[in-house]
Length: 82
Ligand code: F3S
Image 1 (cartoon, rainbow, N blue to C red):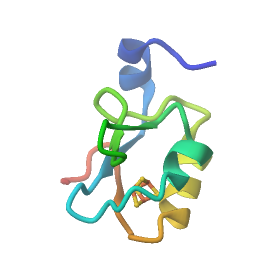
Image 2 (cartoon, protein in one colour):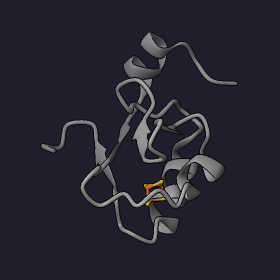
Image 3 (cartoon, helix red, strand yellow):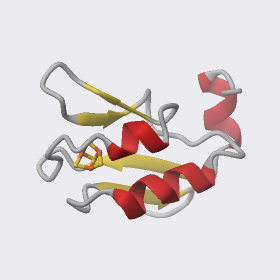
Image 4 (cartoon, rainbow, N blue to C red):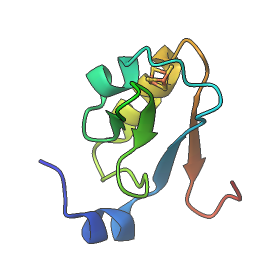
C-alpha cells in the first residue's frame, strides 16, 4: 500500500528522477515499480508526484534503476545534492 504523498515525502529517504533526455520508453521502470513511475502520452517515463519513495519501496526504486537500459533513472538520497 502506498502512503499518501505528504506522508511519503516526510518519511522518504530516496527520491527517483527520470532523465527525460535519456528515456527511450522501454517501460521497465513502470512494470517493476508502478507506484513510482508512469508513462506520459508519448510513452516516456516520469516519476510520480515529486519522486519521493515511500518507506518499504526502496528496493523497487533500485530495481527500476538497475533495469533501465538507457541509464535514465537517477536516485538521490535525502540530504544529497541532486
Ligand atoms: Fe524510460 Fe528506462 Fe523507464 S528508458 S521508460 S526510464 S525503463
